[in-house]
Image (cartoon, rainbow, N blue to C red; front, top):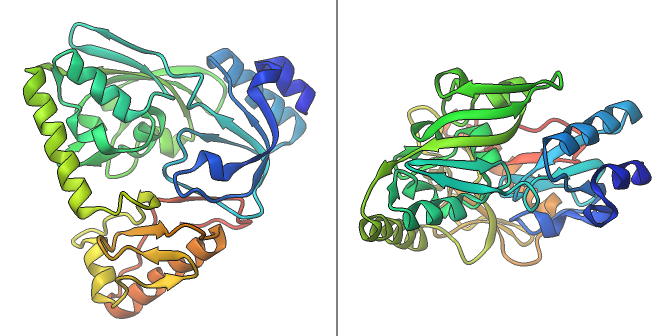
Length: 303
């Protein structure tokens, strides 16, 4: 399998037994059996076809900002889109982005070009691809507000293109997540603005995040989805879990909606902390929290 992957994407873009702690914002995770970095849709499709032909599990990873990989790692192929598939172009008020472009990079590029509308994404640590899968949002903005069209590799191996309406965006979901497609590229439609005003708004949001979020620790951002009619952080606080720890994994004292790695947490400790938070909140409020974080290599489906 290693030789096949090397032929498909090049020896310098394939690693065996690659520690995933270096590819997730939690900074934990054991080795992936293989990690491959395709540079375009053709190579991506080739890697997927090879995995399917060999009966080898595979998963798509961007910046790893919404991912918890087990300490045992992942016995399959991690297809990493962050570095190679990261082309960014601006024409007029439209921005074309490959799936591996970081949202912060996109927001800064929009600011330099005097394009407004993407400020909300400037502090989200993920990539464009992951943001479209879950319709990422913050501070009153969501990806659905700026997307014009999306190119994707469908589950049947065909290339598809979707308009904003066809993406069926909802809270932390989209057509991409429902159909298990893979984002290749997106075109955003922004609006003209004054660079200094755009930068001021981005700085304002950065200040709010710094005050309210535990940015000094490794985490996956907001750990839990917002339950309808509630706020996850408030439910966790009301359950008496502010600062609650399992080993070096902790419910943030600054913002209870964040589970943080204080420095030496294991993936097992983080997963156990999440489970205990879900159980305690359910006991105290009757609300079962669902995670935004995805679990990989745990041998069971987690939600």
